[in-house]
Length: 134
Image 1: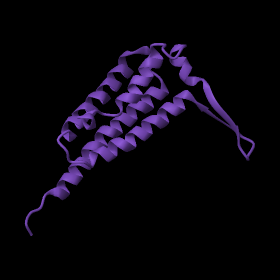
Image 2 (image 1 turned 90 degrees about the horizontal axis):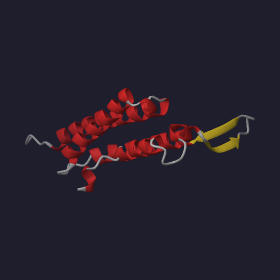
Image 3 (image 1 turned 45 degrees about the vertical axis):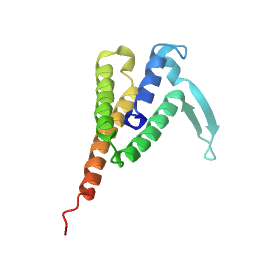
Image 4 (image 1 turned 180 degrees about the horizontal axis):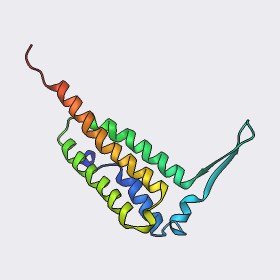
């Protein structure tokens, strides 16, 4: 049953918790710097909380695509729920002032790729499972 739950709900929930101020400071807390490294070239590379959130979403996307290759009973439910998560991203991006950021837009795009990629992988793998008796 847990396989049917879309993992992209995790970045959506984390962003909403930040927007509600549970991490302190609202959405602005996502711009705070976590790490700063001096590179060999002399440039300074910085990592912010929003960058980490995007990295988490990309890792989640990887596991969602892996889940799409499974042909279980929860596969169709997972695709429908992933579509609902994307719609939640889209509605929130359009209607909520705190969600109109580049970070949220990238998270929404990752959710869209999850939906399209999940359907494409499922259709492709289901086509290979069908044998025509040749």
